[in-house]
Length: 258
Image 1: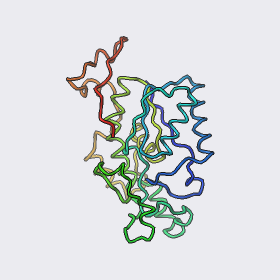
Image 2 (image 1 turned 60 degrees about the vertical axis):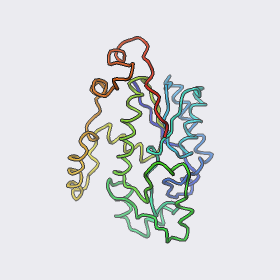
Image 3 (image 1 turned 120 degrees about the vertical axis):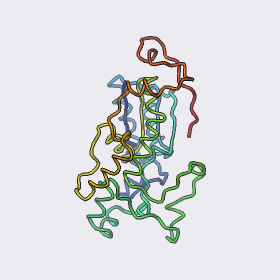
């Protein structure tokens, strides 16, 4: 059982040192080469995922496509979800990182970028370039979640929710799963999988303890066997014995793609 995590290649806005967030920008030429390299590394390691997950953002989607093409493994299903999107950078989206740092100061800049529960300032409709930096995108119309900024904590909640909803069942049934996503969505997932304390600053310890009490199941290490024993649907033809045995395993019930 392997979980393969790939951060998207350099985007056009990464190359310009701009905050991107939920803005849907293309890969740069360098980013396309980085995605090819990811596919080559998978081939060299002999790793061939059975299914792939990615976000709604094309820089991650194209990274997955290019890597799988390089691997010669394009036949597998690629499922997309907004829950794997990059964090929403609010009013900082589309702005130069160095200019933002100069305007808001080192402390707030680092609290947002490397902290856990500090979101960037929300983007406001009064901003003259609001429509450009907060575009109305039809693919988000019915998701029931329209943030105007997100902290890493906010990002973690949706990522871990999706991890349990979709990715853990696929790991149990298919074995090797690939995720092509973003720096902060992958960072949130790794923090969870490695049971890392998201808080290093003493002023944030109290908030962290409250979060532990509210979401203990999200902050504990994953136990695949326990999940297999307790979470398989009675309607599924896959049993715990079939998952642990050497025979073929029936695929899970088809899930609605977001």
